[in-house]
Length: 99
Image (cartoon, rainbow, N blue to C red):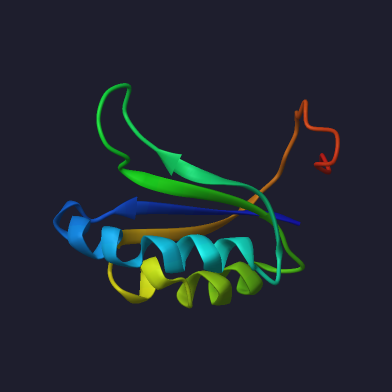
């Protein structure tokens, strides 16, 4: 199954973001699950307001557990985190399963 983590940043936590950025990046790069895509998102101009992870998992709980241990989540960098199932119906990426 394909799952998403949509995380919205807490604007008051810019110092925590900077402090825990390397640990967060290392955590994502050493993930025990298959992260297909990951990165921050931002308005056309301005700093990132959140981040997205697209992962292949056996169940949503895998991404939920992984997310809970992320340094950004543990240290309050994100104000809100949503874990969602995603049914891909169209993809130009060849290794994404479609419904």
